[in-house]
Length: 107
DNA sequence: TTAGTGACGTCCC
DNA sequence: AGGGACGCCACTA
Image (cartoon, rainbow, N blue to C red; front, side, top):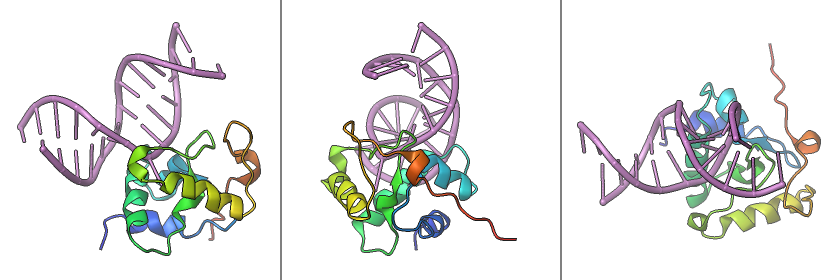
């Protein structure tokens, strides 16, 4: 088992058509200021077949994080988001004010 | 053990 | 606007 189950647990809660940021996931997973670990954790997920909707996590500027190391999954991420109805502007950015997910805390 | 490297974020020019 | 400097921490050589 991976050591990032807590992170995956949060990501699984993001509904289709919405997005979250790496930093946001880190905070919800009780790991403040560890956004990089969220990115690392999602990198692992993508290599496997998983039920974690990794494509619904973007950076704090509302952009897909592009990297040659992702072997094309970055472009796939954009396609998956667009397929869920999320629009990118001409700079390749998403409107976070419009699409960012806000977790509903139960009590 | 130390140094370098990221699917990151925040500050400061 | 865009870029550099750090801080962060797991992983690797």
